[in-house]
Amino acid sequence: IDVSLAPLKKSDTFKSVIPSKIFEASAMRKPTLLGVEGEAKRIINNYEAGLCFEPENEKDFIEKVYFLKDNPQKYLDFQKGCISLAISYDRKTLAYEMLKILKSEVRVEELVSSKVS
Image 1 (cartoon, helix red, strand yellow):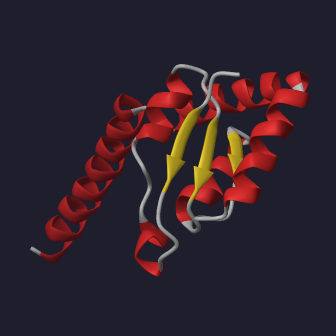
Image 2 (cartoon, rainbow, N blue to C red):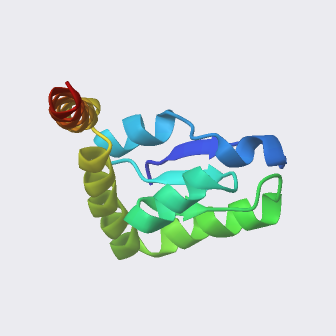
Image 3 (cartoon, helix red, strand yellow):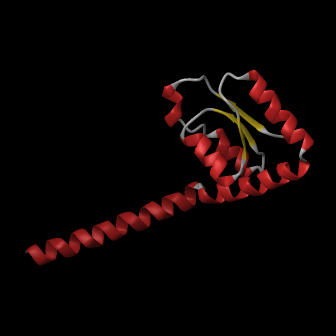
């Protein structure tokens, strides 16, 4: 099995951290074995782009590795999830969406300003 490993310390500090490697790995269709709680875990689970293990829990990590080894179809499913994740978090797509929002806000501001004047 070919996966990306993203282990972080068990700390509240890391709950808001999203390791950038999950996006790079997803673009390469490599499921992530993620050892962190919080937002990154939500992303991996929502897209079914890998498995999450409890940070600093060696037993849980090893169980996840064996699960992937013993379930090749699930590995393929995770690869499909990686594609969806990569498309959703593509920087060009996100930048374009942000630009659309900014343009719409500028238009609203211009309309409001012209009505006030």
